Image 1 (cartoon, helix red, strand yellow):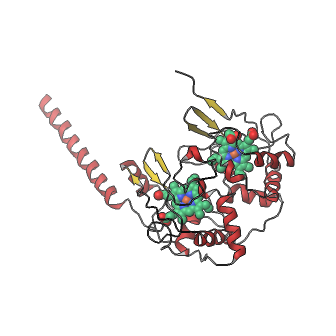
Image 2: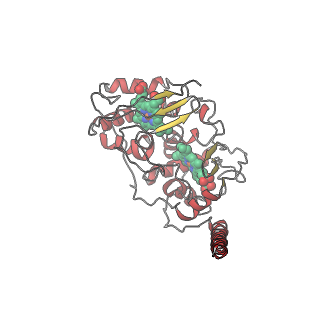
Image 3: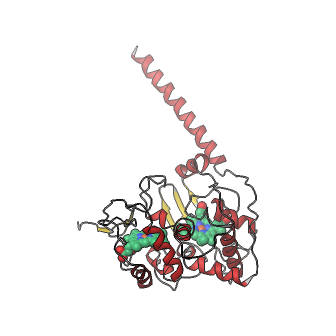
Length: 318
Ligand code: HEC
Ligand code: HEC
């Protein structure tokens, strides 16, 4: 009787091991899932107005260089690291990601990629090889015009030869890549006219500068679980944890509730106060005054949400 039971258990184990092995082999062979997407039709140009706009977005509001540089998160704030040659190492539970070189070097950068490949990376989070990326980039609703400006600028800068190690996914990462990662398919406008209205401020906060992505509480897979712009999203760093302040105009708990528009502009001109803050203050120092006005009017127009956040909690000494 006992023998029979043991045999049964062994048989179950063998079956289980076989099933797991087959699944692992399947994932290993198929995790590079390719997606075919509709053409965006977005193209680069040598037009100097477009290139100037692109430079402003890449180095300022869209802060591309803070990730596409090898200097690491601790150097987010140092203006010296403005090369877009990639190599920032991001360690995640499912693998090690390296940010690509986005200078126009044809061997190690984006020189050999088409406008369409670049546009799809920015709009849909799909790499040049048609695989979906972990959605680090949040420019999916950026206008066709602004994406075209960004690509035009990237094509105009000096190529830098810098071979970046390939992103390495562990088995968990491969499972995620096979079953969960998908292109981000959202509607986006053709053009959004810059002005100082709250509507343009919303475009900046959501589609261009990703204020919303950091200043909103998010769940394990990145989905919003708190009220937008009410803060509370935690970012651990060495020595403590940052939590994003509440940007809604709640009189008691909203950081900017009592600020005037000039206070807001002055705050961005001043730059970071916490040396290790993940907020790309250095990039944001080049925000145009009119754009900051639009952002301010937008944030002040939000529904006040009560959420008291302490921006930095140091780790208790051991
Ligand atoms: C928060 C960090 C972050 C920011 C900000 C960011 N990127 Fe990226 N980007 C990444 C990561 C990470 C990858 C690669 C992910 C991978 O290997 O799966 C990537 C990939 C890319 C690719 C794809 C290259 C390829 O292989 O096809 C392009 C193009 C790109 N980024 C351009 C930009 C531009 C332009 C901006 C600014 C508008 C920007 N990125 C801002 C993190 C960032
Ligand atoms: C990568 C994450 C990240 C992004 C993107 C981001 N922030 Fe922040 N922000 C933070 C963190 C963390 C803090 C708290 C630490 C600090 O003050 O630097 C903060 C603080 C602030 C403060 C409070 C400053 C003070 O003096 O009390 C304001 C205002 C602010 N952010 C506005 C914005 C706006 C507007 C945007 C978009 C243009 C934005 N943030 C984008 C992470 C981010």
